Length: 370
Image 1 (spheres, rainbow, N blue to C red):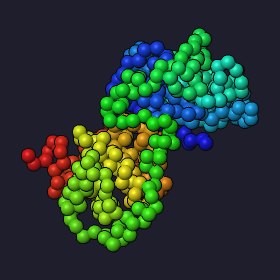
Image 2 (cartoon, helix red, strand yellow):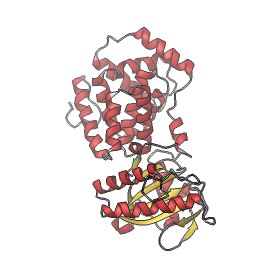
Image 3 (cartoon, rainbow, N blue to C red):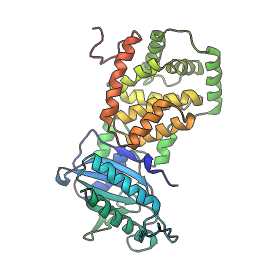
Image 4 (tube, rainbow, N blue to C red):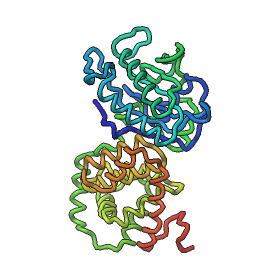
């Protein structure tokens, strides 16, 4: 299925891992994205003269195959969707002052030994990439392809000198190891990543909904509401079995914008990984309105640490639950425009002031009472 051009994924690793040859680079792609790509085009920013990588962008690879649908007058096998994607990604690279990129195509319909219709499509996409990137002063350093990213799977070059080899074991890639050390896993597919925040058991959601209605709009102070949520977050690494009453109390509390905004600052703490897991768990068990809030808090956390794929999936979940939810829409526009994590991190820092306004000092607050 075609993914709109405004929902590309952008991952900017906090660990600048230097990579060796193409076999190592291909093996690192799942760690760069957080999942194994399928029928995807991946653009990897090249830095330090090709010695290290920067932001990574992924998009669905839409190929015509035997059913060519040429844009009128274009004279290319590249589909209209891919022409739009190429223009968008090239513009993003220019805005980020990226001097060069490597393109990686992962598609089970490709076969190095058979120059079939799909491979011809990829070659056409590469040609369009070269021309469009060059118009922005950006170099396409290499274009590589593989049917899958897996240990010993074959990769080959799609342009320039004909090279090929076998992909190193992705599970032992330095970037995979770095990601695991940061407390995050590499999923087998983007769908598997999305399933981590799919709505949970209907019975539990109904029970939580009933408890939310019983609690009503809530009569507690903002201090009590924020303190209560923080206590649940602190329990999360050790007590993941919250009952519907607990979850309902959290839901009522995060409805308050001041409480929600204070919680954004938790993404800057040492326990940010646990906090993200907490919002992922909670978002699965809430009715639509409150699910939008929790999924947005998850998206914000992922965005701050530079995990575009998780941020995108969480934003989509939030907007599916409530298409008018303003913070989710703001994050959607920021991610789609290619805004870096540092911009969102500034917003997170404002959460400390919101917490102080609630009468609570969060860990790491540089201006709170000591």
